[in-house]
Amino acid sequence: MRYYLRENTLFVRGSYRSLSTGVGGGIGTVSTLLNHTLRPDWDGQEPLRELALVASREGLPADFFGLLTTVRMQHLCILQYDFVTVFISAGIHKESPGTINIIVCSSQGMSDAALAGAIITATEAKSEALRGLGHPFYGTPTDAVIIASEGVVVHPSAGIHTEVGHRIHAAVLFGIPEALRRHEGVVTREASSYFIFSRFGGDHWVEWLPKACPYYPCHFEGQRCEFCYCPFYPCGDESLGQWVRSSSRNGPVWNCAGCTLLHQPGIADYLKQNPEASLRELKMRQREKQNEA
Image 1 (cartoon, rainbow, N blue to C red):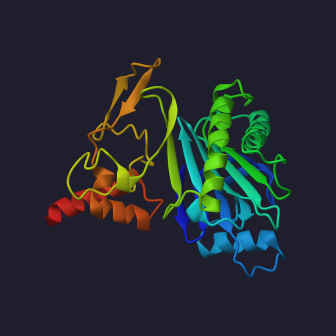
Image 2 (image 1 turned 30 degrees about the vertical axis):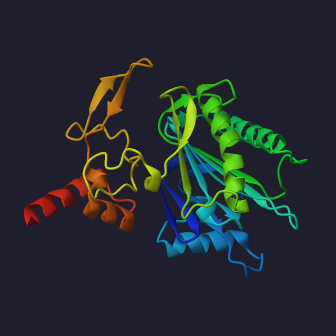
Image 3 (image 1 turned 180 degrees about the horizontal axis):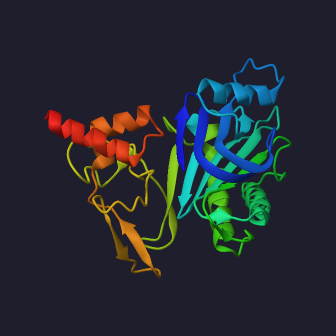
């Protein structure tokens, strides 16, 4: 999975078996997931064409599932819980119902039944979050969900008590209030917010804030931190890290604490400009810059 923001659109790229309740949705294999903020002057006509134009302008193929919203992507919340990443945009207005969009991506494969079950799990978590905030409703008429997974199927179902369902429920339950706070201006951020589920010091969610990071600089003065959570993790490239035994769970985990590749300013800039660049391409760029020096 690789995701990036371009103006007011979230692009999530990969090779997904996916189920979408959005416009033009259904079930199928797609390479792109979109969450697009509509212009204030949009006339409400041909929503699927609007999404197709967004994909076309980005030079992407037509195999996509997309969602539409009036919420700015600045207020987007991204939540990482192990192999599950959840993207939430949420807006509730006094004068209109608003929209809550949820995109769930799993790097571990899910069966078609699990994709359908995950929609139920995410919706239940959304309703629970709204009730917890004191709202008298469980959603809005235009809410939509996309569930997507990559790889060989390892999850036959996605109820709340399954490994994947538990992670989806936890991320949505925590993310809905955070997304609403940002949309309402209770919490202000210059860009989308990123949360990681951490087990250090007890299970809890941590928002990564580059300006307030107590560990800066974790590698070297002047490092770039946009990719603090590496989009290639776990890359398995033994020139950048190694597999080590986990102290808290069975099986090995990827340790790349000493890797500085994406913290190098030139490499970070290149990946921002070319968000689908491969790790091999970035390493080649690194060698070129070293040779120039």
